[in-house]
Image (cartoon, rainbow, N blue to C red):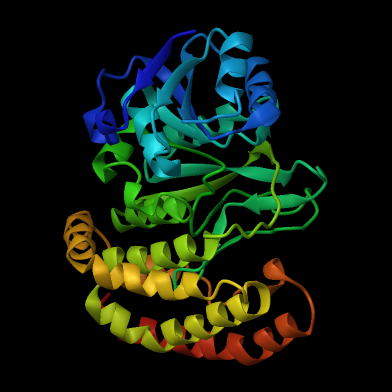
Length: 368
């Protein structure tokens, strides 16, 4: 196995790729203390690997020995070892920099792929030039008859939810355009990745896949859910000590980067409603950590020049209007994904109509 120690300061975005494309596909897996799950993931990949594909494992300074175990078990996998934890986006950018594939495929280390999972993702890209990213039908590893996500639904406030979570696996069987790809398993062309500048490493954790999706859509690219590509994901709704901070900070950052000021003003009522929703979630599920929401506000304020610089760079990508961008977003939030019960039912009854009216008004006044 080719194992490379890469200091953090040597990382780069996709635009700095060190070699021209030579392989068909480069599958990039970012690992941080992935344990036995990482070995199982690589084992599932090894069953049908093609000679013109490559696997790149980026280890984000793990301390559990998982990268060493993978290195011993799978000599055909190239391992890149970072001296520090670069986060999801930074790790993927590092892997892309050292890859040589025409297509880049991003896969979580806590997934198992099914036979034939890769070909549908790449075929859709090859046959449909207007499609920029493709994403798999992702099923729950703990219950393989249930859906984890079939692409992601994006609310026009930036909130992102799993599409089809908990539904039977035999549903959602048609290829359709989705609001965002799932970072657990998706593919894209190298040239698009480089044009976008790869993942935004500021995000570090959470929302990177939605941000990449929205920037691709800003370029006029379509995001396609491909149901013939089946991947199993060890998914459970978890709330780490900083999850709300990263999710909320990154949502604000994405909105400020991508949307025009006029659009942000037009959807201001919806953004305020989204604050009611997210604060309600914090008070119900994370009442011991309300500071995470406040930290998200503070980070944006403290880093305003950096946010504006990122906004200017993102706006250079624009090929479509915000009206086109937000037209495929939903007005309906699936409150059940964070807990069933009376609170979810009340939220639907009270907030769904308000979000719908706000969306229609905003779309009506946006530039075409």
